[in-house]
Amino acid sequence: MVSAIRDQVQAEREGEVAGDDARRDRVEARLRSSSAPRLRRVINATGVILHTNLGRAPLSRAAIEALSIAAGYSNLELDLESGRRGERNDLIGPMLTSLFSSEAGLAVNNNAAAVLLALTALCKGREVIVSRGQLVEIGGSFRMPDVMRLSGARMVEVGTTNRTRARDYEDAFTPRTAAVLRVHTSNYRVSGFTEAVPLAELAQLAHGHGALLIDDLGSGAIEAVADEPTIAESVPHSDVVTFSGDKLLGGPQAGIALGSTAVIRKLARHPLARAVRIDKLTLAALEATLRQRLTGHGDDIPVQRMLDVKPAEIRRRAAMWSVKLEERGVPARLVESESAAGGGSLPGQGLPTVLLALAGPASRLANALRHGEPPVLARIEDRACCIDARTVLKGEDEALIDAIEGAFRAVTP
Ligand SMILES: *Cc1c(COP(=O)(O)O)cnc(C)c1O
Image (cartoon, rainbow, N blue to C red; front, side):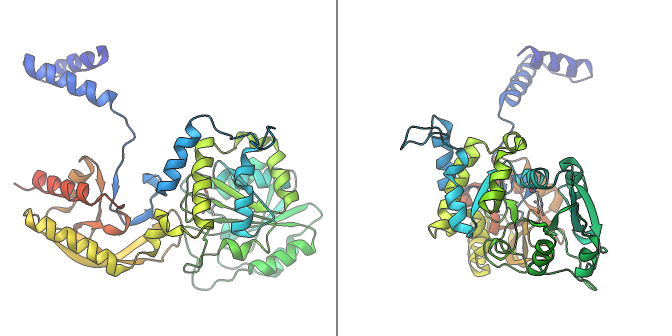
């Protein structure tokens, strides 16, 4: 209250003119906006499924319900059968095992943590061989050379940006080699004159030299999409496979590490594991998401649905919106385009979509939409403000139409 008044006084000192009523209104408005929650639901009409700025994967209904179970008291670390102390990871370990056919699995805070933990627990003070073509940076803060340094492992770079051969790896092994690391180049593609060693061969090389193979998949594709490496392809060859929970899996922010019982135990018992352990709310949402995948209900996971939805269905939905908008005097047309998986998944692999292109000044419309309630994030394409139905969640249709109408009225005289 005091600071709202102070801000108003300051504004008037700086030249704002206000009568008594206006002054009271403005103080009230300041008060309202300062006590309103800062984190708000938004409608994602960008067509980018795993939108980093919008929280990556939207959770499934089941995952959202699971959050409320974990919010109270729960058997998070208690074996109800015996009454003895349990391990939070035991709640999902068996599910990871059956879903991905690995011997054991562990979930931590995020994939960056999973990679850091694997490198620290298994390679600290020793050498890790990695191709120069795979020294990725993800989202501005996850840079493989930095993570490596942090883990205490010494990075041995081999090959060139576009080509790394078996021979390059071969020459780099020393008695100090702990592992070969493969990093999936999630958010870019090296195309043209390229060469990389297939995973099976990389595994043979590593194991032939008594080293481990660590595979950072990043996106963690469950099924074959484009040329994204799948989890199932990696598990038989790798000693540790890591990927994110909130990319193609479609769950909460988490990092999953799969591997043999011995290797996963090493990770779980390392002191760093405690610092990067998975939170109870996340664990609950992850369990629910994994269960949906395990029981053949993957279609109920929004990310999966958005990846699978057919262009004809998107067209139907967009056409329905355009009719409704037309009735309200808001002109729009349908245009064919592409959506993106996003989140560093399937780079260069557009998903065919149908956009609703709004008539009117594109950037002013997009601005007005973003300032609406709920805020709508659109995308500008060919100088039109466009709505991609692919990423608009079920049940958001009415709110979206209202928001578009509101934005249209705000920017057209
Ligand atoms: C996304 C990604 C990461 C980081 O994962 P977070 O879950 O965001 O921590 C690490 N490695 C690769 C290859 C990735 O694609």
